[in-house]
Length: 368
Image 1 (cartoon, rainbow, N blue to C red):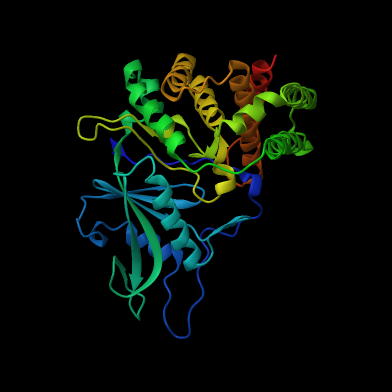
Image 2: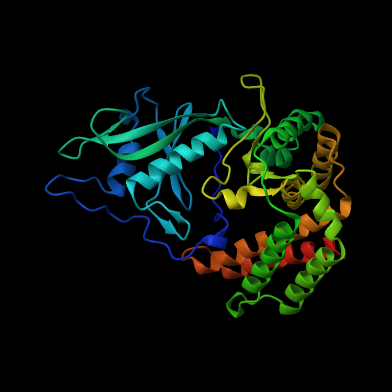
């Protein structure tokens, strides 16, 4: 079935704190009826709400949004939530986030992210998608993608051909070379990486997560040792302008390989709400993608992606550096896994503890 593939995992809780109820109703303005979030969701589930009249509408709920699958299109409605730096509780904030999502994702998915649409209401609160009344919310309109052509599904289905990776990696290499660079110094970059190691270790050592503290400590020690012993490697990365504003969440489920109707590959669902989290080494971002391919039992796919990147970019990122970045990102994923335990209704805790432990074992192996 054709679908829009969206991320359902928690989005980098480095900067996330408490959360308001996503089903919260909004305040009324005087005597004017103000539609609540549940009203908006019910309206967007009705096929008659859309100008192109789809046969049916399905919904996918993520941590921060609802995505409505309506015929050839997908519409994303942001939840009025607060997660530290991500504050979507006001209409203006949701509009800005929608516009940022459109702008940033068009860098690697120009033809997928189509427009921003207002969800309007009249004086009685009757809703309409598109102009015609006062905006009470905003949606990102996207083209739906064939699920079978997403990289994660192509790997699982055994349909991926190695030559399909070349156009994808070539696009990414050009994106990094032509993208926004940073003015970060080598010292600032090393301090940033040290902070990330300490933050991961601090979270993973929390008693409530019941992880092996000796394993956590040994991984952190190995990562710090690599930083301490190889400062020249990171200085060179900065001097060669390899630290850029990247995608920020480059996972196989966000990569569209292309098909006959839309042959160009695309990368969707970037981390739009924090530029700071998008700034990273190109090799770091691709190491994360390779790590997630390995998690799908497709280590050769990850290795090919790194190989093709070196060919297209001329960036001969050392293999030990790539392994360090894999270790670093494995700890981030371990932290995200145990953070599920902080949320209600996330399933058995043993699953998330086991997943975090698997990531930690991988993180240690990369630096052994």
